[in-house]
Length: 292
Length: 85
Image 1: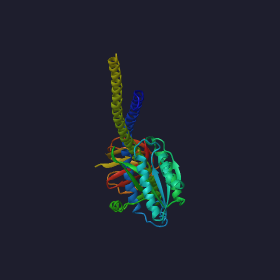
Image 2: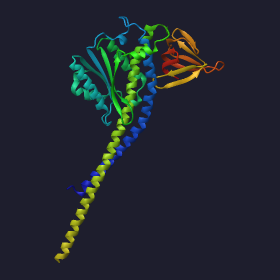
Image 3: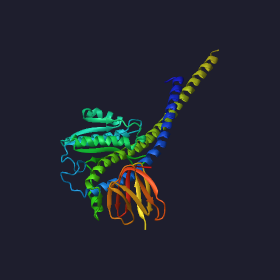
Image 4: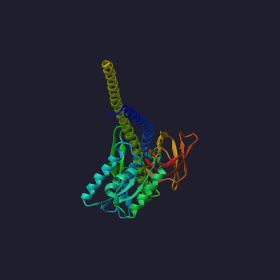
């Protein structure tokens, strides 16, 4: 049995761990509110842009002169997985869930004879994917604090991706991120980033009266499609930021509770040990007195 | 008689309201949008000013926006800008 002193030290150490996890939980809760607002504020733009892209895409002929971002390269041999994670851990299964989804999809595509490459945003994704797909990571970036990420930064990645796409490095790009449903539920999601996926129902619904284009369809599309890529990326990082904080909050709440349980258990053990020591002492005194 | 006008940036929904008229700085020149405007789509000059007339007689409210484009459909006018100040 551990000595009284060792137990005391142990209890104190668990207590300070509990203080830290409690503080981290509070920080996550405060950040969560801001991240959630940002994620929700980004939704209207993404939704409207999507509607506009679908409506214009349905009107433009998918001929050979159509932009690559719309029509695709005509093949689907090489897939690029853009995996958005965070730079920091201590957020429960947040990063693992995204990586797991990406890995599963990659294995499915590999089994079908396709090539899969990775473009990671976030240290954790790079590290976890690096274990199995080390040579397939074409590029990785570190976003730092997801909550402070601006549109300008995201645009840089988007234009990098667009250049790679136009250079023919890959045929289809998928975007992996964690969609924020609620504090307790974050859903790892994948969407097709390039070429633009046009929903048929949305496209036909908005076709009605003839629309005037200024300057013309092609030029608007040339402006619109790269913008769509950056907006989708921005949306993914915003959703990720909110999910990360939500996940962190839950994880830290659990950790705080576990530390509490541990303290209770150790305190009982400490009290028992102390009582045993007292009893032994008493027995010694009494037997000493009897011997006289 | 009002035009439903929305100004959206990636950061937030800046405006969503009913107004009398909006003057949009299109790539090929400014154009005013009133209610019942025919459907159109236009890119926007960067660093240009949008003028919002709440009513026919009111002084216009000016918002500077960068990049983006405007869409007019039967539901109203939507401006998707990169940033608005």
